[in-house]
Image (cartoon, rainbow, N blue to C red; front, side, top):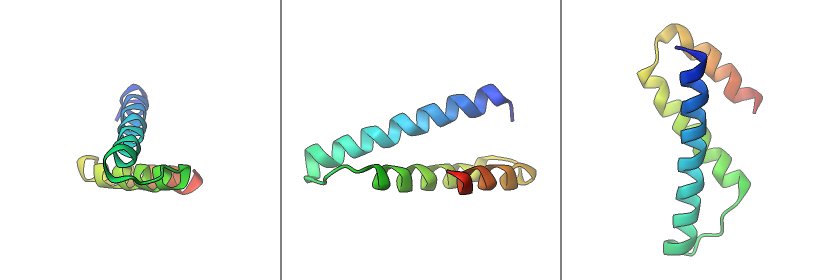
Length: 67
């Protein structure tokens, strides 16, 4: 997995979760919060681990634990 791909994916996942927070506010009257965004972002990254090689899982999980 290249560094450029990882950075690109992180940016897309962050933007996607911000968009979901916005939609929750507009359509479901949910108050957006950083904690909710962070939780959803981490869940999204964990789901994407299914697309990665097993050897790369530990690196990604260690990164997630650090944020």
